[in-house]
Length: 181
Image (cartoon, rainbow, N blue to C red; front, side, top):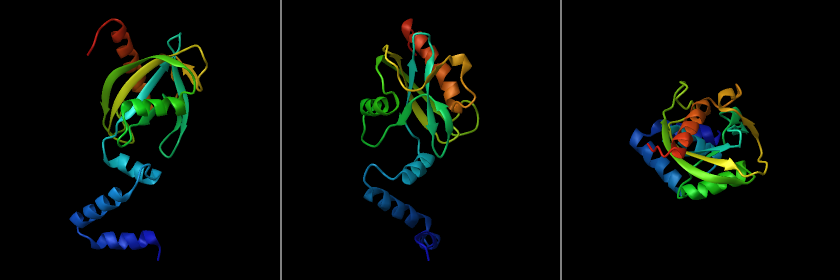
């Protein structure tokens, strides 16, 4: 018998409260970083806190970078998920080092937006999230990826990023004019 089948048989024999206790015990035994399969399962069952970063060039175009994982293949704005016991600043530094290897300036926090899980344009098809929105500008040096005008995003753009990019642009415009929400 395989381990998966043995565990399945064990779980089938347990009442719900004992399953919950077993899961909690297993999760507390894990050290960070947790395996990706566990991380993805948790993201499907909890509200996540992504950090979304719009990198803008002098022409007002936004940086799109490639993404290929179990959930999506195409282009997206750089982003990451806040990890356990990590500050937003630490997550931003990790994001910049991994997805925006270049020089940026004028980092701005633009608030947050909630996306429930679902298929609509203003939803995330993968999970419920409270996204922390940020923007910055390219500081003359080339960054990896390709720039696109917000109104001309490629068809293979992550669907909820198509909604976030105009929202980020609007909040940047409001910030420049002293309008705060």
